[in-house]
Length: 120
Image (cartoon, rainbow, N blue to C red):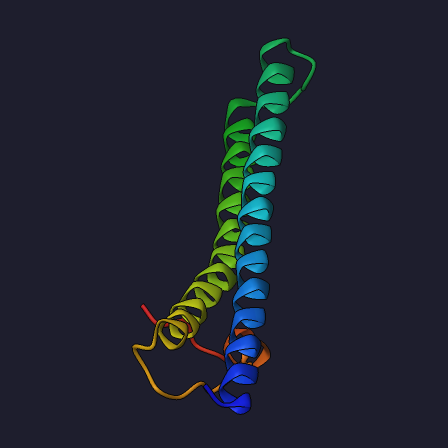
């Protein structure tokens, strides 16, 4: 193996490590968001059932729905970044396995930046 190939493989491996860390961090953010949404919704429900919260049923339901929808939106935002990192890691893994002959990286900012599109 030539020195250039070794450097390229080393660079691809480093990018894969960064992508893996990013995927883990995005999952952590998603679970934290879900936990906070559940905690806020639980607190709202307990306050409503104990009559500590002086709002009507319709307001209570709208508040709960707002919390749920906000949680979904935030979770979807983190999911987009996570899916982009997963897509890019598949490309890097293909190169490391030898399934493709060229490596076009590192491209973390390009593939995960705001201008990128998430492929389905």
